[in-house]
Image (cartoon, rainbow over all chains, first blue to last red; front, side, top):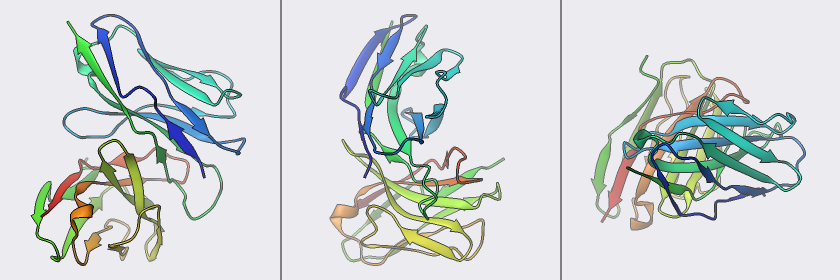
Length: 118
Length: 112
């Protein structure tokens, strides 16, 4: 079974600065999908960014980018020019490509609470 | 678009009571699933469905039942609530197997 580890329960960043959230995973599969989800106090789960393991290029979405290191099984999220609205819980998630009935099952990490300070 | 709608937003139950958490999506998505979120544990899959009439168990299915009579609806039933089921419950859907999940806003359930 796959596992996802987020070793930073809390992180802080100054507004306009850059912060990196860490995520590692364990899998024996060669092809899979990785995601970062944001959960603000409203509780809504918001997709931030996704990465297909077969793609060597790191995914980017505006101020959000990832550092995907497949051999090291590492998938960190970098937030540039941090804004107050970035304050939230961030979850890393893994999805297997295996065509079992699980379909779009995600395995989540335990989350990193990001605080943005003025 | 409404997306994924969950009701109720909050619920308090007594041990042994039953209830149904409702989930509806208006995006014609085939895949639907239920997760629970507990402090320090992330989200864990309870049950999922790959289409109307088809359901299966996830990681933590005990104490929960589901059915999928229509593409739009995927209710989660607690037959006899226990304090261990105190949690935040999320319903999610996706168009295809490899599509990102769309989440509802969650239901906070407290069992006393």
